[in-house]
Every structure is written in structure tokens, then in C-alpha cells.
Amino acid sequence: MLIHLVCAARPNFMKVAPLYHALKKEPWAEPVIVHTGQHYDPNMSDAFFQDLGMPRPDIYLGVGSGSHAEQTAKVMVAYEKIIYELRPDLVIVVGDVNSTVAATLAASKVSYPSDGSAGQVRRPLVAHLEAGLRSFDRRMPEEVNRLVTDALADMLWTPSRDAVENLLREGVPEAKIQFVGNIMIDSLEMLRGKIEAQSTHLSLGLGSGDYGVVTLHRPSNVDDAAVLKNLCSALQAISEKLPLVFPVHPRTRKKLEETNLLPSMMNGHRLLLPEPMNYVRFMSLVFNCRLVITDSGGIQEETSYLGIPCLTVRENTERPITVTHGTNRLCALENLGEQADRAMQAQASKDRAIELWDGKTAERIVAVLRGVAEQSGRGA
Ligand code: UD1
Image 1 (cartoon, protein in one colour):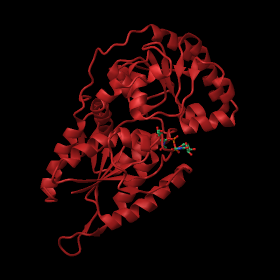
Image 2 (spheres, rainbow, N blue to C red):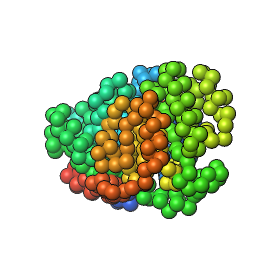
Image 3 (cartoon, helix red, strand yellow):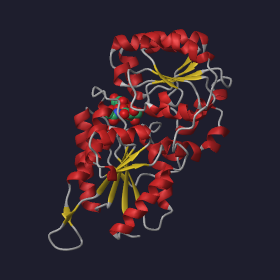
Image 4 (cartoon, rainbow, N blue to C red):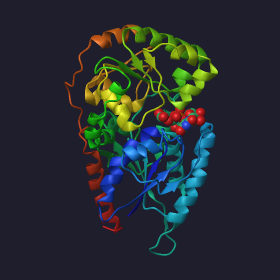
């Protein structure tokens, strides 16, 4: 069974890695990594492949940056050619980035003669890993990507029960949905030894539990100059009480430069602005921190799993389980200082385990796919 694992951007790589490793062990599976090239800086891409023990991508589409339509269209055009050439049996897409929806659209519309009886046509099956998450906010490009991907995919692999419910509410047949758990936890557990052996905080001159970690890159937080300015002021004020480490996403760095906010942000040793870090180095920083301030999806989940207080600077989250069962709190920019004060007092706690966030999601997906391979007679 020829399986394409499509990945594109930083948050995709840790979702693909455990599944790639698990499929590699199966005699019936031929996993192939397709990197669309949406993220291309070495520290946004190559560093993750190294950490996660993945080989260089078998196929690299090199689409780079662009507007949403450009990026989506470039992936569709490039990937359609690859599908016709290689005819995969299954295309696995992950997360909610532009490449996720683009690869899904391309794979859903191709058709070529089946190798069986004359006149029959075939296309690859499409599976969406991390299906069913909804912020119910269509101003977010990722929400549009999630909706379209889930409407088209043949198999929907969900990380949590609320995601299953969202899909059922949208009329998706139950047979298409498999509740497999959270694949990000597989990566974290796979690399726990290496993460615990790193001490990123010490290399930055910080003690364990004596600092906060910040990541911000969402258009809603960084694209508007006035919002970004307020955010920077809030972070500076918090850093007077608790040193902050803010590895700056390329998108955010560009905006900080355009708005001339970078010099004042760098003026002071309590607010550190390193380049984005590789997975192990970054997770080591999170493992040892007092609190996280973010707008990332994945970090809401990782902090919940680890029991570390997390303030998410957004109006909503597509991952509500991190609020109901984890340590995540949604936070308006105006309240960031006050909520940070409160979070600094909170003890790290891991009171409730989240169902199927157990490091065994890749195993469950392999079991599902073994069944598919047997049914289709492809290589099983
Ligand atoms: C993308 C995803 C978002 C994800 C985020 C994680 C979409 C719609 N958004 O947002 O869901 O949370 O990745 O990082 O797919 N850039 C570089 N080097 C790189 C990558 C990007 O300089 O390696 C620059 C680009 O030139 C662009 C900006 O960063 O100006 C944004 O990149 P893009 O991939 O368009 O979206 P992200 O904001 O990274």
C-alpha cells in the first residue's frame, strides 16, 4: 500500500513522524514523505526532521510563501502531477495549514484507470489526521482549511471526543470517523528522553521554573500594528516580574521589524527573543517553565498534557478540551498581565488525563490501516 504522508509547516512535522516510524515497520505499508515546502527556513523545517529521526523528504514540492490562494494553488498544481505519476493508494494529510486543504483537494479530484476491470476509475483515499477540530471562527484561515478538508476526506481521525461530535453534527457518516487520540503526544513521548537530557533554560542563564515561554504568530495578534504594539507592552510588563523567552516566528519577526518594535523589545535582558528552536530544544524549554503565553494550537495541547499553565491569547480555541480538561485559559490581550500574575501563582498540576492522549495514537492508526489494506488486497 503506497501511502503519502503530506507535511508542510512546522506543526505538521511532529504529527507525521510517529506515524511514519510506525508504518515503516509494517511489511504491507510503503510510507513516502511529501514535503510541500510551505515552511522552508532550516530552523522551521530541517531541524525538525533531524530531531524527529525522519529522513529527507522523498518528495519536495518547494512551494514557499505567498498569499493563501497562491500557496494553496501552488501545492495543488505540484501535487496533482505527483499523484498522477506515483498513484498512491492513500494520502494522509495532517493539521490545518494551507497545504493540508490543497493536497486534499488535489487528491479528491484526480482519477485514473483502475488496474482491475476496464472502464473503472480510481483515486487515492484521503485520510485527515487531527480531524473535527473547530474554533467556529471562520475569520481564521485554519478554520476554513479544517472545514474543507473534513468535508472531502474519506477517513477522519480525531484527537478527542468533541471533535467526533463536531463531525457528526456536520452530517459526516459515523463510519468515516475514527477516534484515534492525539498524535502530538506520541512525538513528545517518543522524544522524552532527549528532551529531558537537554537544558535549554540553563544555556539561556535561567533556572527551572523561573521563566515563562512565549510564542505568538497568528494574524489576529501580529498583523495589526496597534494590536502588536499592545501585545509587546504587555509582554514587557510581565517580563519585569518573570523573565520571558519568546522564540520569534518568521512571520512575527517580519511584523516587528516593519512596525519598528523590535529594538524596544530587545532592550532588556528579561525578555529574550531567540530564533525559532528545534523541537527538542523548544520542548525542553517548555518542560522547565512556569507558564506559557501562546496563540499556537499545538502548545495548548502540550502544556495541558504536561500540566503547565497556559494562557492562549485568542478569543476561541479549536481545542476546547485543553480548557475543560487541561491547563489552558483563553485570555484577552487587555487581561494578559492580570491573568499572567494569577498563572504565576498556580502550581503545575496534572489532575486529569485526557482520553487517548497516551502516546499510542500511531499504533491505533496502523491498526485501522491494516484493516484497509486487507480489505483492498493492497499489499497486506
Ligand atoms: C502557518 C499555518 C499556521 C501554523 C503556522 C505554524 C496556514 C494558513 N497557516 O502559518 O496554521 O500554525 O504555519 O508555524 O497554513 N516564513 C519564513 N520562513 C519559513 C516559513 C515562513 O520566512 O520557513 C515567512 C513567510 O515568508 C511568510 C510568513 O513567514 O511571510 C508566514 O508563513 P506562512 O507559511 O504563510 O504562514 P504561517 O504564519 O507560518
